[in-house]
Length: 270
Length: 271
Image 1 (cartoon, rainbow over the protein chains, first blue to last red):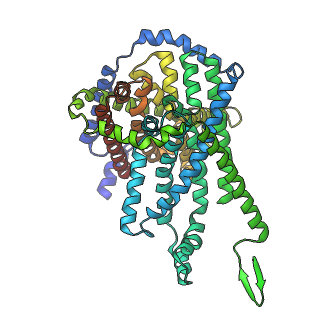
Image 2 (cartoon, each protein chain N blue to C red; image 1 turned 90 degrees about the vertical axis):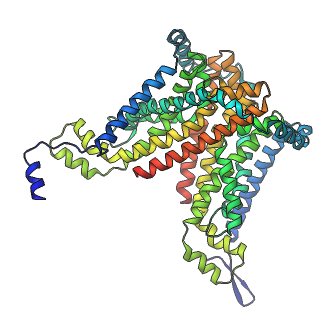
Image 3 (cartoon, each protein chain N blue to C red; image 1 turned 30 degrees about the vertical axis):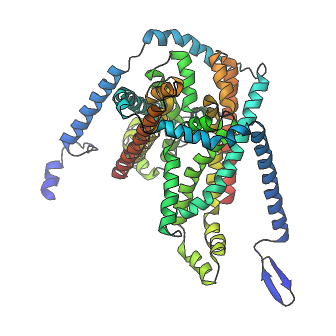
């Protein structure tokens, strides 16, 4: 130790590097820059087109200062209502389905076969993006909000069941055992032993998912699954930036409101 | 405690009568809202198609299997593009998110009254609009292609990264910062030696986590014309080439699983 000190004393301090092995460190840096160059070479950016488009970009930014809520108000209103309806219905159904699946996907209360099936459902639901599910469901069920509703319900199951199962797995065993020792049936055991422990988090997560579902419902319209996305897409296609700006402002305001409400609710239940 | 007397025995209840009433009213209200929503959905649904759905699903399944494996030779370039969109988008967004996070964290912001609300608004606005919508917008502005996808992913990720990062900055240990300040360090030196080392693990974790999400999102950006494998997907869907569609979906699934595995490994190594 003292010899180490002797060599160090009198030298200015230098910050130790993040990765101590110099070969690995410089190798990573070189590989990173090589990748950046390779990536940049293969993306052919048409700067002339970008430059020509800047004008339109400026127009769009300016449109935010004068959003047009009125001239397409019935389309905007209809699309927004449909989005909200899809969101609410899908959240309710998704939450109801994800509770039993969440119970089944918790290793400490479910037998192994049930656990594997429920984990499988969760994995499938999480691996498929909403928009791809929406494309398939639109192909199967036809255009309209039903496809969007089913898509979001399916996505909610994966999200909520996984987090609920993790919460159940990390709960306090003592309370659960106390309920079981009083001679409770399985349903009573879940209702009085497990449910009070996970309820605050379940409520918080449900509201968070409602928020996500609304955001996702805004894009379902792009593939014909109902909601505000169709109106937004049309507005972009027709270069009606003031209408598009109005829709985007509405989405942002609703998301902000939902986040605010979810903050209040989560503070109250926890 | 809510108890009632039955003859001589006291019976415990979970809620008082008033609480039960309020509870039931809440459930009833929720049920009414759900019933209304379901009615609206049902009204705008062509039920004939829904009853016919099992047949259609079987039909699509029989067309989509087996996947057209030889088509994979044409997917190399789109996968490379998808990877580039996600990676470059994440890098650009991190560069933009770091200053926003420092402006938004209440212990590092230069002005709580003016600058912090602006930074918070940037975070909410970029986060609440989906990357597909950003892509749609950017395609109208800078033309279709991979570059629009990169920018869309970059903008969309700012809010997410900045939000997590500013929460990490707000949670730092102020003792270390004070110690650095006490040595006479300048504002930037305090930043570099007092704050940055404390948030570095969180930063790396956020970066990898967001990269994983961006891989997912960039696989579908092509649906609106912003490059990547989604472009192939939408082309195949448009000509109803179901064997190609199923192969592309399998490739996307593989990409998502691999990126999740990589991000879990890297986060495990860092934290």
